[in-house]
Length: 463
Image (tube, rainbow, N blue to C red; front, side):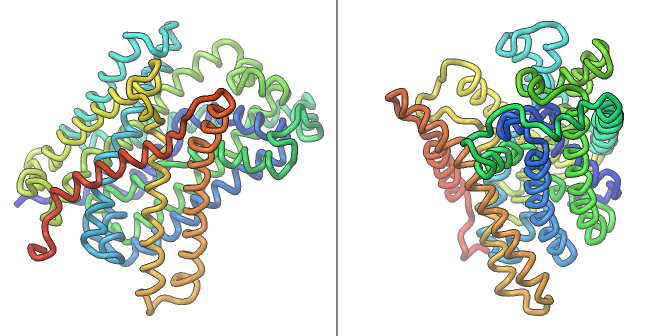
């Protein structure tokens, strides 16, 4: 039977990490952070660094695991090796049916939305929704027909998206130092922080940055197609994570050199771009955002198209013989890709009905791009605990210290997601005399999907 070949090198793997994490959020989360901190630049930088450190810790732990385990779809390999085949199956089932398609479908819409800005289209209009579907299908087509081309596109999109970030980081910082804007922004606070204190403002800023760092785990989905994966995947996770953190922090500082924090709180980062690069700069920023989002969409589609293959390669799930097939001409998981596109399309319809209308699903309206963080990080925790229990040949740092820190990072990520999407919306709703707790209803849907997965799970006797 045809198998996946090792066709990607280290640069592609690094660009998978950087390109999948950095999407539209980097260009607009600066405003959220400044709002949360009241314009306190030092606290804002601390928030970016702290959340970045959490990502680096988790990626470092998986990098250690990548040096030992190698099969199909990295994180699923680690789950299977540490917690057993059944746990690996359920993690893979969750990722292919909720995590990947939930984020992928939203990125298709985000890409279309910022493309529509160039033409003045409504973000909920028919033009944007039609283009969302086109971007989704186009990304699938590129991955299904030519995975090598998809890899080259990922590298190109990552380089392109780093251009405006680098320009703003360098030019904005220099301009801000020369005209005194940056110095003044560090010396003054424009408004009161969220909660009225430094601590609460810092926490609110960290929560605002959590979702800007998500998506790095997608890089592990190509470990079966990566040259020398036990060397290149760990390097990609660490190098990619460091690049992302540096890009976010330096961009945040550069933006502060383009306008006062008071203006940035009101108008956002595009104002800084226009002040430094002129009106053309604002247009170019939107073009770069579209390319950036398309790069993230492509990275997520890479994971979505390989999800069912990761399950079938273990002779599990629905019709393993169907989804384990690899096309001889393209060396791509064709049937698995079809399933990935189908589920992404379902989630795009869900996202539109839940978030861009008055709400088609009643209590089951929630953000399908961010809430899966609750379960993905929660599902990492047993992996880390099992690692500490079983890997007796590892030193103290790799066996206990790093996984413990990773476990704490995961707990914080889960709490941040619940806080941002559950507690805050619920309190606001309660003040208005209505009930809303999206986290609860997301978890109900999660449970239903996992029960369906259990129906297709092969028995332990078969295993």
